[in-house]
Length: 146
Ligand SMILES: CC(C)(COP(=O)(O)OP(=O)(O)OC[C@H]1O[C@@H](n2cnc3c(N)ncnc32)[C@H](O)[C@@H]1OP(=O)(O)O)[C@@H](O)C(=O)NCCC(=O)NCCS
Image 1 (cartoon, rainbow, N blue to C red):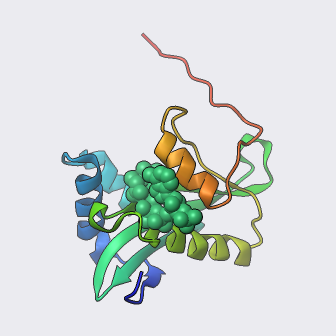
Image 2: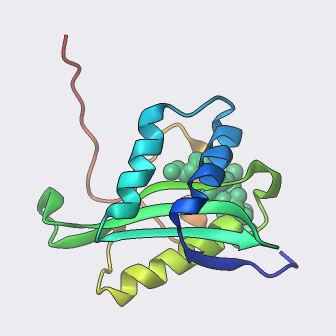
């Protein structure tokens, strides 16, 4: 990436662009609940919410948080939502956002970072492997209520 990338905390005024990026990724409008989720994320005391900006344009976002006591873990960082504008994917924006987020987690004394990815999402698994993630010692379980 040649032009300098600026990683900074998310502001409320970024929400519209974050939604536009997510809609470009999923190629349909986001559910109203997704916008609410972003707003809640911004209000979290233990949130790690960052955007990547280039030439004044927001081109990627990262929302994570520190959870305390969940899954028997004392405290751990969780990646919740993470996206890069499809126009600039594959140019290092995701890695830069992840590096900055990892530094924030580290500053707050967090060493273990978790996320969940669909098992058949090969691209995403490759990305996370590339930035240093490997299989955790948890598996996700589900049931469906009728
Ligand atoms: C996943 C995502 C955030 C990665 O961002 P990005 O800017 O495209 O990734 P980067 O260019 O920083 O890539 C970092 C590394 O991962 C690798 N990588 C990225 N995308 C990859 C893919 N689709 N397949 C294989 N490897 C990939 C790159 O080769 C790079 O490795 P390198 O530095 O050794 O060359 C972005 O592609 C995205 O927004 N995807 C859709 C949304 C999503 O799935 N979000 C995550 C779940 S919340």
